[in-house]
Image (cartoon, rainbow, N blue to C red; front, top):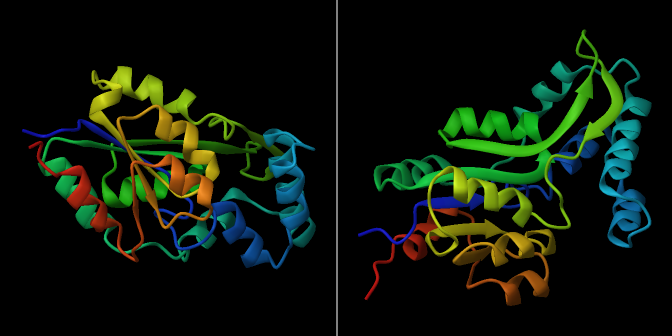
Length: 218
């Protein structure tokens, strides 16, 4: 009998080989968001302002930036190995897979569609009717408490905290860990995430989490 009904995956740094979907776009445009990142981590700016400043960097590199340009760049974003195998195996076992990310929803949608995730929740980039970026973003996932996004999913899929697993890699995933019965730090980027998780896995293939998730109860 399976132990879990739902697995919540962080996207950036877990399903991708880059720090974040935001940083991938920075890299593609050759802009530096490190000052914005430090300001956010230090509590000097909130998440909406963080998004606003990052989008402004992109528009400084390409003033007529369109959402279609972003979509093209995401097609080349490096991904971790084993995503297809992992999602398919969980599905065959009757376990739902969901992306919960502070990354960009366009990237999350592409991954969900390509690999068969049951859905995604991520931050949104605002555009006008022609697809041009307005410079604003919508905070959908609160990086200060990703548990706020996980708990409604647990209710939606009719399961419990104990029968839900989560996979993340950074300190912003710790609140998600606290909202699930099993938490996996996958290639953790800081000691706090490692300490907060039920277990730690370091690998270049996400399918290695299956050994833990599908481990039968004694």
